[in-house]
Amino acid sequence: MNVGVCYAEAERQTWLRLEVPDGSTVQQAIELSGMLHQYPHIDLTAQKVGIFGKLAKLDAVVKEGDRVEIYRQITVDPAQVQRRRIDLD
Image: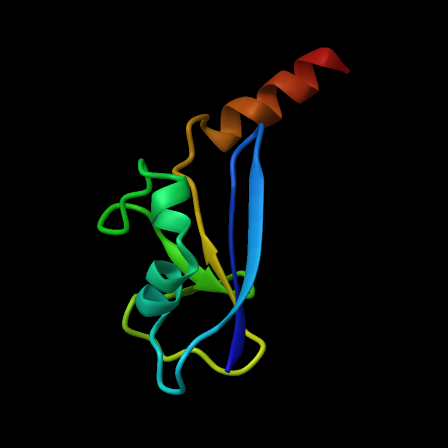
């Protein structure tokens, strides 16, 4: 079954398509993608994951064509960003 796995940082983004066995979970797809070796600081116990922009659990089963996403932790309060934009206008 063909799925995608993606992860993005400000300076580097990676999106991989790969074949995984039928019945694979989100965690298995991430592990098979090699993403944890490319980005050793990814911590699946702390970071959220999703499929096509919707949060998912690591044990969720992926389907043909799914895009598994690994989300970074927010480093800036979104309310602060909005205030800065207002102040700049």
